[in-house]
Length: 179
Image (cartoon, rainbow, N blue to C red):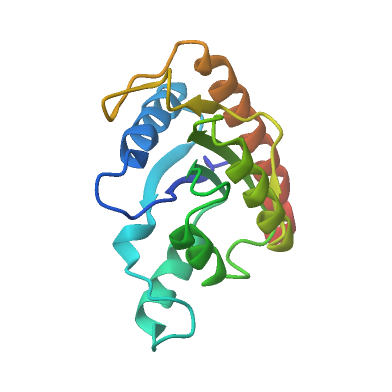
């Protein structure tokens, strides 16, 4: 069986964001496991306009093509006003079938570990037929970041690896539904 393809989705597009640092940390740990093909997928690169505001056929096609080639996801989610970013919600809405019957893990961060954003994302993922896994690394702005630099505590490695184990198991099982 060939290795699964897992996209690490960066959920923010604003200048000065720290999601690329968190995404690189996840990718470094994940790549070290050697059990799947991991890649960072930055929604900022797709320049998706607000859904319905203008013709976005080219951007939507590229976005859906990228998602269709992935077997599962790890979302890097930061909490904005107790929820996910508008950019992530917009990117989720720009696809439908490309999300279906796949698994996802969530790595969140915020003042309370991004827990409220993660819970909002879980509801959206359910509507898109994405099976979100239980294990959830929650990073604190107060203890895992220093002056805008991500410095995760070692204790997060257990949850990160546990989440990746679940994402791979579920992604492999759900792949049989898509074949």
